[in-house]
Amino acid sequence: MVGALSRVLASVLHAAGRRCQYCAAVLRHAGDFPLCPDCRELLAPRVGGYCPDCGICYADPAAPVYSCLACRRSKPPWSALAFHGLYSGALRDIIHRHKFSHDHGQGQLLAHLLRQAWDRHGLARPDCILPVPMLPAKVLSRGFNQSVELARMLGKATGLAPKPCGLRKTRDTMAQSSLGRAERHRNVAGAFKAATDMTGQHVLLVDDVMTTGATLTACAEACRVAGARRVDIFFLGRAV
Ligand SMILES: [Zn+2]
Ligand SMILES: [Zn+2]
Image 1 (cartoon, rainbow, N blue to C red):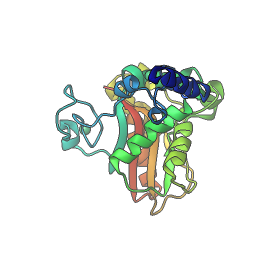
Image 2 (cartoon, protein in one colour; image 1 turned 30 degrees about the vertical axis):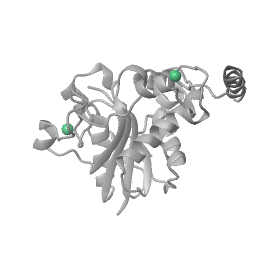
Image 3 (cartoon, protein in one colour; image 1 turned 180 degrees about the vertical axis):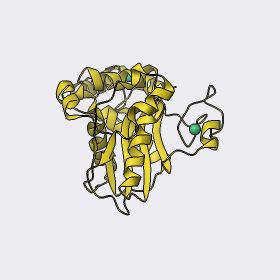
């Protein structure tokens, strides 16, 4: 009887499209949505063993949260950050699918991860949410700017109603992935400019992945130049 009921329940869930949004397994409990228990574990947020200033992840995820040497020497130009976890495994896969395969069917999964990161870090509500911009030509060739998509989803998932504000990229830069750490900073230094007045604003910068932080640093500095009183950053994955 129980077996028959669970089969009925499974078929109902199946019919309702309640599948894990990562591995597509049929979910046994509707409350699990959007992830099955296995994928929930694979995509568990990073709660320990990272730097609260730049998000760099230490080898031991069970280590405490403490500032890395680089951040103790020189604080980044933002006040606080929120992120989901290390840019590897399932998280890397999801971000890749979104960025390079134009897989927009992951909306509910991405919204879940964004919301989880937002709730966990407890950042103050910003006046505006600002995606890291791309040059218009790059947006045209890729078809979309993934940071714009994530910022939109974050605003929707968290109920934040940001004021419009903008940054623009003022010159072409080389792909950051092709460069070393020091070159990345030189590559993007001064490459962003505020498109709106940010006097007194609390800005939240959004990107999909942070690697060295060079791009987010250049964007945060542009916000400061435009008068922002506070800049926080938000990204999904922290690369090492
Ligand atoms: Zn799954
Ligand atoms: Zn750090």
